Length: 302
Image (tube, rainbow, N blue to C red):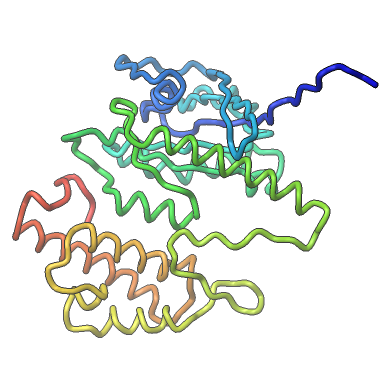
């Protein structure tokens, strides 16, 4: 009998960090790995690489992370590192609308450079809204950031590399989701008909037609009717008078996911979606007039 002790290799996962220059990707990574903040800004030259170990669901995990430069001049360098990716940290700076609007471009680049559309679809993505520091003048408020993440079915975290806010949970959630996705893929490979449950982070649901396209449900039709016909803005959002900023934004996110053109073809949904944005802006303005301390930043979008 072989008396040699058997050592089980740790499960290896590959992570990439993606986003514009200066959004704090490297600082987030250093905050997680080294538990420290580096205040000086040094642009990543091409690619930085690091390895760490963690435990997920009682499994030893070796995390290989590739910190990709967001500078366009390094495109020909970073495009070689997209293939074989298990997960991505998609980062924007809450004080920069430009970095937020670039998120769609970064998703397109990931899809273009990965080995196949299947690999892209299997990549687990976490969105980090970074630089959420005390007193910061935000260009993107939490409601808008969460809505973008919800529409793409990505987990969303407000983070600060400076204070450590949200960093640990963002990374640990990403690692856990990757390991569980890989485990599901392994188990389902012997059962070709198996499918993961549909992701619905909004809690709203998405009815579909027989051919799988976005459909029309009772929630959609009723919401459209209420937004277009209710006489009061609070009623349009299904809120009581005196609702807080948080309640207004929560209702906005829920209804925006329900009525977004990518989610439904309900008659009147496009018009109701526009009304929804106007109603939110109106209600937030009312809150500001009542108590300026409860209002969003002046830089926040309507």
